[in-house]
Image (cartoon, rainbow, N blue to C red; front, side):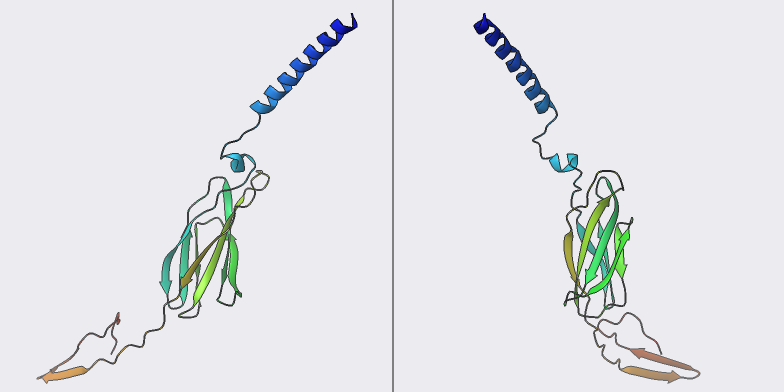
Length: 163
């Protein structure tokens, strides 16, 4: 009788163990989406939108479940030039030095209480162009009666002329 009771208990315990293992397998995941299930946001990707001798503009793609984006701009010596948090998908920086390489760091935040953590940051570098010294135009002045005409050949890189 003791042997029959032992076999019965082992069969019941084994059945309970199998049921528990099946339940655990139903609620676990081995997919590549584990980061999303754990609240980890994807990385964004950024690109330089525009550059001038004293400004840089960057843009980045939206991330699913992100509510805002943080950014930092650093100079070549890694000094913080500017930083902020925005819901926009772009940031612009002015009053920069010409011919200088800057590094932008961008990362995303999930909404407060959503269970989503910050994304891994991405880094992007961009260089402000150097100031180009323009050549001096050679002006030719012609007067004919009451009309005076000034003309000159175009100067490389000049965008407008004033006189």
